[in-house]
Image (cartoon, rainbow, N blue to C red):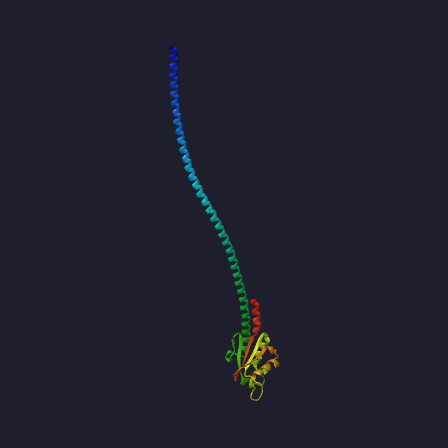
Length: 246
């Protein structure tokens, strides 16, 4: 009987112990489920954050790619701009150099013209002592011109002593670059002698001893006047101008 009681007591204790362990086990399982759910929530949150961060990384990658492309385009544009700026600067410098060269040549040609005008003014002042503007002296086309009445020359005892012709000879001797053009009637006179124009040509070449290549005769239908024209050697002026423009 005592053995039965002991056995029964053992079974009761075992049963109580097992129930307690089962209860504890169930609680542990429940706690484990709770932990698993928490872990799952954490995993879902991590996945969500990972997805968000992955999308953000993709966005940053695309932005970085766009920035690189923009930077490349900008560098190319800057390179082209720099090249064009250098080319334009060189063009401007070349144009400025050309302008300076043109201005320098213009100044030299202007100086040449002023020299010619100065010579003409000096020559006119010398002639004005004998031939006034009232007698027809004028500066025209960079030349000095005046008429001489044929009647006065025909009545002159000596053409070589005629004051106007003496003055012209002095100018021709002073300014060796001057050319003389005698314009008048080239027909023979009634007595068969040479016309006034040819007589003047002989006077300047044979009596005054001027070089023949500095004197020209030109025809005119005016029977009353012979025209005297003194002008610079325009061939020389042309050559000087051409030399400046090279």
